[in-house]
Length: 338
Ligand code: SF4
Image 1 (tube, rainbow, N blue to C red):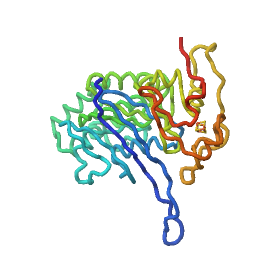
Image 2 (spheres, rainbow, N blue to C red; image 1 turned 120 degrees about the horizontal axis):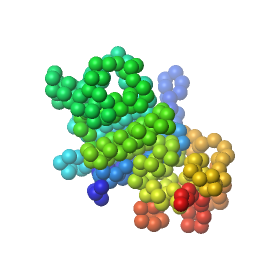
Image 3 (cartoon, helix red, strand yellow; image 1 turned 90 degrees about the vertical axis):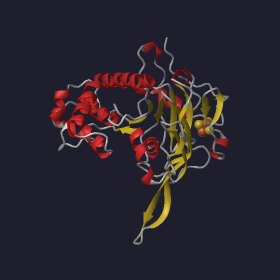
Image 4 (cartoon, helix red, strand yellow; image 1 turned 90 degrees about the horizontal axis):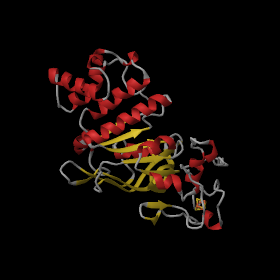
Protein backbone atom coordinates (compact mmCIF):
# COMPACT_ATOMS: atom_id res chain seq x y z
CA UNK A 1 0.00 0.00 0.00
CA UNK A 2 1.34 3.44 -0.93
CA UNK A 3 0.69 6.72 0.81
CA UNK A 4 -0.79 8.15 -2.37
CA UNK A 5 -4.27 9.61 -1.93
CA UNK A 6 -6.55 8.04 -4.54
CA UNK A 7 -9.76 9.67 -3.38
CA UNK A 8 -10.26 12.87 -1.42
CA UNK A 9 -13.82 13.86 -0.47
CA UNK A 10 -14.09 17.45 0.68
CA UNK A 11 -17.13 19.13 2.27
CA UNK A 12 -19.45 16.66 0.56
CA UNK A 13 -23.15 17.45 0.86
CA UNK A 14 -26.17 15.53 -0.39
CA UNK A 15 -29.40 17.27 0.58
CA UNK A 16 -32.63 15.76 -0.75
CA UNK A 17 -35.53 18.21 -1.11
CA UNK A 18 -38.81 17.50 0.76
CA UNK A 19 -41.81 18.30 -1.45
CA UNK A 20 -45.31 19.04 -0.11
CA UNK A 21 -48.67 20.17 -1.43
CA UNK A 22 -50.40 20.32 -4.78
CA UNK A 23 -47.59 22.18 -6.55
CA UNK A 24 -44.89 20.12 -4.88
CA UNK A 25 -43.39 23.07 -3.05
CA UNK A 26 -39.97 22.44 -1.45
CA UNK A 27 -40.53 22.76 2.31
CA UNK A 28 -37.18 21.51 3.58
CA UNK A 29 -34.24 19.21 2.97
CA UNK A 30 -33.10 15.86 4.30
CA UNK A 31 -29.40 16.37 4.96
CA UNK A 32 -28.37 12.79 4.21
CA UNK A 33 -24.70 13.82 3.90
CA UNK A 34 -23.63 17.06 5.50
CA UNK A 35 -20.08 18.33 5.11
CA UNK A 36 -18.19 15.05 4.99
CA UNK A 37 -14.39 15.06 4.57
CA UNK A 38 -12.47 11.84 4.06
CA UNK A 39 -9.70 10.36 1.98
CA UNK A 40 -8.80 6.87 0.78
CA UNK A 41 -5.17 5.90 0.12
CA UNK A 42 -4.25 3.91 -2.93
CA UNK A 43 -4.43 0.17 -2.14
CA UNK A 44 -6.06 0.53 1.30
CA UNK A 45 -9.50 -0.38 2.61
CA UNK A 46 -11.41 2.38 4.36
CA UNK A 47 -14.38 1.09 6.37
CA UNK A 48 -17.34 3.48 6.57
CA UNK A 49 -19.66 2.51 9.43
CA UNK A 50 -22.76 3.71 11.23
CA UNK A 51 -26.38 2.84 11.92
CA UNK A 52 -28.88 2.40 9.14
CA UNK A 53 -29.87 5.83 7.77
CA UNK A 54 -26.64 7.59 8.82
CA UNK A 55 -25.76 8.50 5.21
CA UNK A 56 -22.94 6.04 4.54
CA UNK A 57 -24.59 4.50 1.45
CA UNK A 58 -25.33 8.00 0.12
CA UNK A 59 -21.61 8.87 0.40
CA UNK A 60 -20.81 5.75 -1.67
CA UNK A 61 -23.42 6.61 -4.27
CA UNK A 62 -22.13 10.19 -4.59
CA UNK A 63 -18.57 8.90 -5.17
CA UNK A 64 -19.87 6.48 -7.84
CA UNK A 65 -21.91 9.43 -9.21
CA UNK A 66 -25.20 7.53 -8.94
CA UNK A 67 -26.17 10.82 -7.24
CA UNK A 68 -24.96 14.27 -8.19
CA UNK A 69 -23.86 15.84 -4.89
CA UNK A 70 -25.56 19.04 -3.67
CA UNK A 71 -22.14 20.47 -2.79
CA UNK A 72 -18.49 19.74 -2.12
CA UNK A 73 -15.75 18.02 -4.10
CA UNK A 74 -14.73 14.43 -4.83
CA UNK A 75 -11.15 14.51 -6.09
CA UNK A 76 -10.14 11.24 -7.72
CA UNK A 77 -6.71 10.40 -9.07
CA UNK A 78 -7.20 8.71 -12.42
CA UNK A 79 -5.02 6.13 -14.22
CA UNK A 80 -2.88 8.84 -15.77
CA UNK A 81 -2.20 10.38 -12.35
CA UNK A 82 -4.34 13.46 -12.99
CA UNK A 83 -6.86 14.69 -10.42
CA UNK A 84 -10.48 15.02 -11.53
CA UNK A 85 -13.41 16.32 -9.53
CA UNK A 86 -16.10 13.64 -9.87
CA UNK A 87 -18.62 15.82 -8.02
CA UNK A 88 -18.75 18.45 -10.72
CA UNK A 89 -17.91 16.42 -13.83
CA UNK A 90 -20.73 16.64 -16.42
CA UNK A 91 -22.57 13.35 -17.01
CA UNK A 92 -21.22 13.02 -20.57
CA UNK A 93 -17.62 13.07 -19.26
CA UNK A 94 -18.17 10.43 -16.57
CA UNK A 95 -17.81 7.34 -18.75
CA UNK A 96 -14.08 6.61 -18.08
CA UNK A 97 -14.77 6.84 -14.33
CA UNK A 98 -17.75 4.50 -14.56
CA UNK A 99 -15.10 1.92 -15.54
CA UNK A 100 -12.59 2.84 -12.85
CA UNK A 101 -15.05 3.20 -9.95
CA UNK A 102 -17.40 0.23 -9.47
CA UNK A 103 -19.92 -0.75 -6.81
CA UNK A 104 -20.84 -4.10 -5.23
CA UNK A 105 -24.28 -4.13 -3.66
CA UNK A 106 -25.66 -5.75 -0.55
CA UNK A 107 -28.31 -8.09 -1.87
CA UNK A 108 -26.98 -10.63 -4.39
CA UNK A 109 -30.59 -11.77 -4.98
CA UNK A 110 -31.91 -8.34 -6.01
CA UNK A 111 -28.81 -7.07 -7.83
CA UNK A 112 -28.67 -9.85 -10.47
CA UNK A 113 -31.28 -9.86 -13.23
CA UNK A 114 -33.07 -13.26 -12.97
CA UNK A 115 -33.76 -13.25 -16.75
CA UNK A 116 -30.09 -12.97 -17.74
CA UNK A 117 -27.56 -15.78 -17.61
CA UNK A 118 -24.17 -15.32 -15.98
CA UNK A 119 -22.44 -14.68 -19.32
CA UNK A 120 -24.75 -11.74 -20.02
CA UNK A 121 -24.67 -10.44 -16.43
CA UNK A 122 -20.87 -10.28 -16.28
CA UNK A 123 -20.48 -9.48 -19.98
CA UNK A 124 -22.99 -6.60 -20.01
CA UNK A 125 -20.56 -3.88 -18.81
CA UNK A 126 -17.96 -5.13 -21.34
CA UNK A 127 -20.51 -4.77 -24.14
CA UNK A 128 -21.81 -1.39 -22.97
CA UNK A 129 -18.30 0.06 -22.83
CA UNK A 130 -17.34 -1.58 -26.15
CA UNK A 131 -14.50 -3.57 -24.56
CA UNK A 132 -15.22 -7.04 -25.95
CA UNK A 133 -17.77 -9.10 -27.83
CA UNK A 134 -18.28 -12.63 -29.18
CA UNK A 135 -15.60 -15.20 -28.35
CA UNK A 136 -13.34 -12.64 -26.68
CA UNK A 137 -16.18 -11.68 -24.34
CA UNK A 138 -16.79 -15.32 -23.42
CA UNK A 139 -13.09 -15.83 -22.71
CA UNK A 140 -13.03 -12.76 -20.48
CA UNK A 141 -16.12 -13.92 -18.55
CA UNK A 142 -14.53 -17.38 -18.11
CA UNK A 143 -11.36 -15.78 -16.69
CA UNK A 144 -13.40 -13.59 -14.34
CA UNK A 145 -15.40 -16.58 -13.10
CA UNK A 146 -12.19 -18.48 -12.35
CA UNK A 147 -10.77 -15.46 -10.58
CA UNK A 148 -13.73 -15.32 -8.15
CA UNK A 149 -13.64 -19.09 -7.52
CA UNK A 150 -16.43 -20.26 -9.87
CA UNK A 151 -16.25 -22.68 -12.76
CA UNK A 152 -16.36 -21.17 -16.28
CA UNK A 153 -19.03 -23.76 -17.24
CA UNK A 154 -21.46 -21.86 -14.98
CA UNK A 155 -21.69 -18.99 -17.46
CA UNK A 156 -24.76 -20.42 -19.20
CA UNK A 157 -26.72 -20.76 -15.93
CA UNK A 158 -29.21 -18.29 -14.46
CA UNK A 159 -28.95 -16.63 -11.00
CA UNK A 160 -31.60 -18.88 -9.39
CA UNK A 161 -29.22 -21.85 -9.77
CA UNK A 162 -26.72 -20.34 -7.32
CA UNK A 163 -26.42 -19.95 -3.55
CA UNK A 164 -26.16 -16.49 -1.92
CA UNK A 165 -22.36 -16.72 -1.68
CA UNK A 166 -22.02 -17.79 -5.33
CA UNK A 167 -24.28 -14.94 -6.41
CA UNK A 168 -22.11 -12.47 -4.55
CA UNK A 169 -19.07 -13.95 -6.34
CA UNK A 170 -20.90 -13.27 -9.64
CA UNK A 171 -21.57 -9.66 -8.51
CA UNK A 172 -17.86 -9.28 -7.70
CA UNK A 173 -16.89 -10.69 -11.13
CA UNK A 174 -19.25 -8.15 -12.76
CA UNK A 175 -17.69 -5.32 -10.74
CA UNK A 176 -14.19 -6.46 -11.82
CA UNK A 177 -15.06 -6.88 -15.51
CA UNK A 178 -13.94 -3.37 -16.45
CA UNK A 179 -10.69 -3.56 -14.43
CA UNK A 180 -11.65 -0.93 -11.84
CA UNK A 181 -9.21 0.78 -9.50
CA UNK A 182 -11.65 1.81 -6.77
CA UNK A 183 -14.37 -0.59 -5.59
CA UNK A 184 -17.18 0.58 -3.31
CA UNK A 185 -18.74 -2.30 -1.39
CA UNK A 186 -22.15 -1.34 0.00
CA UNK A 187 -22.74 -3.91 2.77
CA UNK A 188 -21.38 -6.61 0.41
CA UNK A 189 -21.54 -9.45 2.97
CA UNK A 190 -24.47 -8.37 5.19
CA UNK A 191 -27.03 -10.61 3.47
CA UNK A 192 -24.84 -13.73 3.76
CA UNK A 193 -24.44 -16.43 6.42
CA UNK A 194 -21.48 -15.88 8.74
CA UNK A 195 -19.46 -18.81 7.32
CA UNK A 196 -19.98 -17.51 3.77
CA UNK A 197 -19.16 -13.95 4.86
CA UNK A 198 -15.62 -15.07 5.80
CA UNK A 199 -15.12 -16.68 2.36
CA UNK A 200 -16.23 -13.53 0.53
CA UNK A 201 -14.09 -11.28 2.74
CA UNK A 202 -11.06 -13.50 2.06
CA UNK A 203 -11.82 -13.37 -1.66
CA UNK A 204 -12.03 -9.56 -1.55
CA UNK A 205 -8.69 -9.40 0.26
CA UNK A 206 -7.02 -11.75 -2.24
CA UNK A 207 -8.38 -9.74 -5.19
CA UNK A 208 -7.19 -6.49 -3.60
CA UNK A 209 -3.64 -7.82 -3.29
CA UNK A 210 -3.65 -9.38 -6.77
CA UNK A 211 -5.24 -6.48 -8.66
CA UNK A 212 -4.00 -3.58 -6.47
CA UNK A 213 -7.53 -2.42 -5.74
CA UNK A 214 -8.61 0.33 -3.39
CA UNK A 215 -11.75 -0.34 -1.34
CA UNK A 216 -14.36 1.81 0.34
CA UNK A 217 -16.17 -0.77 2.46
CA UNK A 218 -19.56 0.38 3.77
CA UNK A 219 -21.05 -1.64 6.62
CA UNK A 220 -23.08 -1.45 9.82
CA UNK A 221 -21.15 -4.45 11.16
CA UNK A 222 -18.02 -3.47 13.07
CA UNK A 223 -16.71 -7.04 13.36
CA UNK A 224 -16.65 -7.32 9.57
CA UNK A 225 -15.00 -3.91 9.21
CA UNK A 226 -12.38 -4.82 11.82
CA UNK A 227 -11.47 -7.86 9.72
CA UNK A 228 -11.04 -6.09 6.39
CA UNK A 229 -10.35 -2.36 6.92
CA UNK A 230 -7.02 -0.56 7.43
CA UNK A 231 -8.83 2.53 8.71
CA UNK A 232 -12.37 3.20 9.86
CA UNK A 233 -14.60 6.28 9.52
CA UNK A 234 -17.72 6.45 11.73
CA UNK A 235 -20.79 8.39 10.56
CA UNK A 236 -23.74 9.72 12.53
CA UNK A 237 -26.67 11.62 10.95
CA UNK A 238 -24.82 12.67 7.81
CA UNK A 239 -21.57 13.66 9.53
CA UNK A 240 -18.27 11.95 10.27
CA UNK A 241 -17.70 11.72 14.01
CA UNK A 242 -14.47 9.70 14.19
CA UNK A 243 -11.73 8.47 11.82
CA UNK A 244 -8.77 6.32 12.90
CA UNK A 245 -6.60 3.33 11.98
CA UNK A 246 -8.68 0.22 12.74
CA UNK A 247 -6.66 -1.08 15.71
CA UNK A 248 -6.58 2.38 17.31
CA UNK A 249 -10.30 2.94 16.89
CA UNK A 250 -11.14 -0.42 18.42
CA UNK A 251 -8.69 -0.13 21.34
CA UNK A 252 -9.09 3.56 22.19
CA UNK A 253 -12.25 5.11 20.72
CA UNK A 254 -12.56 8.84 21.35
CA UNK A 255 -16.20 9.44 20.44
CA UNK A 256 -19.07 8.26 22.69
CA UNK A 257 -21.03 7.02 19.65
CA UNK A 258 -18.10 4.81 18.57
CA UNK A 259 -17.87 3.51 22.15
CA UNK A 260 -21.55 2.54 22.05
CA UNK A 261 -21.17 0.77 18.68
CA UNK A 262 -18.11 -1.12 19.92
CA UNK A 263 -19.90 -2.26 23.07
CA UNK A 264 -22.20 -4.33 20.81
CA UNK A 265 -19.31 -6.13 19.04
CA UNK A 266 -19.22 -9.81 20.10
CA UNK A 267 -16.01 -10.64 21.99
CA UNK A 268 -14.26 -14.01 21.52
CA UNK A 269 -13.40 -14.35 25.21
CA UNK A 270 -16.32 -14.01 27.71
CA UNK A 271 -13.93 -12.51 30.30
CA UNK A 272 -13.40 -9.55 27.95
CA UNK A 273 -17.07 -8.75 27.58
CA UNK A 274 -17.76 -5.13 28.43
CA UNK A 275 -21.07 -3.68 29.49
CA UNK A 276 -23.26 -3.12 26.44
CA UNK A 277 -24.23 0.55 26.09
CA UNK A 278 -27.88 0.87 25.12
CA UNK A 279 -28.42 4.19 23.36
CA UNK A 280 -31.51 5.98 24.66
CA UNK A 281 -33.85 7.81 22.28
CA UNK A 282 -34.12 7.73 18.51
CA UNK A 283 -31.48 8.59 15.95
CA UNK A 284 -31.76 12.31 15.08
CA UNK A 285 -33.89 13.35 12.11
CA UNK A 286 -31.59 14.49 9.25
CA UNK A 287 -34.38 16.81 8.07
CA UNK A 288 -34.50 18.52 11.44
CA UNK A 289 -31.33 17.74 13.42
CA UNK A 290 -30.89 19.03 16.98
CA UNK A 291 -28.71 22.05 17.77
CA UNK A 292 -25.05 21.59 18.72
CA UNK A 293 -23.72 18.04 18.62
CA UNK A 294 -26.28 15.88 16.77
CA UNK A 295 -25.59 13.09 19.27
CA UNK A 296 -26.17 15.13 22.44
CA UNK A 297 -29.73 13.90 23.13
CA UNK A 298 -28.45 10.28 23.30
CA UNK A 299 -25.00 10.87 24.74
CA UNK A 300 -24.42 9.85 28.36
CA UNK A 301 -21.51 12.30 28.69
CA UNK A 302 -23.30 15.37 27.24
CA UNK A 303 -22.43 18.73 28.85
CA UNK A 304 -24.02 22.18 28.38
CA UNK A 305 -21.68 23.08 25.50
CA UNK A 306 -22.82 19.99 23.56
CA UNK A 307 -26.33 21.35 22.97
CA UNK A 308 -25.00 24.78 21.95
CA UNK A 309 -22.02 24.30 19.63
CA UNK A 310 -21.49 21.82 16.81
CA UNK A 311 -18.13 20.03 17.31
CA UNK A 312 -15.79 20.04 14.31
CA UNK A 313 -13.83 16.97 13.24
CA UNK A 314 -10.28 17.63 14.54
CA UNK A 315 -7.09 15.57 14.72
CA UNK A 316 -6.26 14.40 18.26
CA UNK A 317 -3.24 12.28 17.34
CA UNK A 318 -1.70 11.36 13.96
CA UNK A 319 -4.43 9.82 11.83
CA UNK A 320 -7.03 9.89 14.64
CA UNK A 321 -9.72 12.58 14.23
CA UNK A 322 -12.86 13.06 16.30
CA UNK A 323 -15.82 15.46 16.47
CA UNK A 324 -16.49 15.71 20.21
CA UNK A 325 -16.08 18.68 22.58
CA UNK A 326 -14.96 16.43 25.44
CA UNK A 327 -12.70 14.03 23.52
CA UNK A 328 -9.57 14.86 25.60
CA UNK A 329 -11.34 14.36 28.94
CA UNK A 330 -13.32 11.16 28.36
CA UNK A 331 -11.90 7.71 29.15
CA UNK A 332 -13.92 5.53 26.81
CA UNK A 333 -14.15 1.76 26.71
CA UNK A 334 -12.75 0.03 23.62
CA UNK A 335 -12.39 -3.59 22.63
CA UNK A 336 -9.26 -5.13 24.15
CA UNK A 337 -8.01 -8.34 22.63
CA UNK A 338 -5.08 -10.17 24.22
FE1 SF4 B 1 -21.36 13.58 23.63
FE2 SF4 B 1 -20.88 16.19 23.81
FE3 SF4 B 1 -19.12 14.63 22.65
FE4 SF4 B 1 -21.43 15.13 21.43
S1 SF4 B 1 -19.81 16.62 21.87
S2 SF4 B 1 -20.43 13.17 21.62
S3 SF4 B 1 -22.80 15.22 23.17
S4 SF4 B 1 -19.72 14.57 24.80
